[in-house]
Amino acid sequence: MQYFKNLQRDQRFIRLKEDLDTWRENKEFVSQSIPEDLWKKAANLCKDYSVAMISKKLRLSYGSLKDLAARNIPFNENAPEFIKIPSNIVQKQQATLELCDQKRQISLKISLNGEPFFDISSIIKSFCQ
Image (cartoon, rainbow, N blue to C red; front, side, top):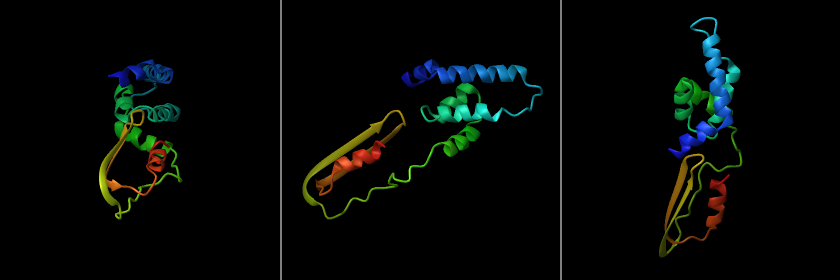
């Protein structure tokens, strides 16, 4: 619920909603496509809010917005696709590490048996990029 309240206060969202409403009222014919600049603004909002929420509140096609948002998010070549955890860990203790990024709506949970010989802080730094 808090996530939705933040969206309703976001000035970018408010302006875009007004622009879309104005465009819908003034379009020349029923099947006229939404202008590309409005689609791009909606896709940029998807960096901070979910595609589902933006598409629903702005009455946009979820699939079209999802595709456009995926193309707009820059790929970080330095970010690892996965982190390999070696299997030769000394069996002394059990630990669970759970990281949540609420802004991007992602989480990472790592459970280890034994003491890892690698630096867990490097995993946290990779996750937080």
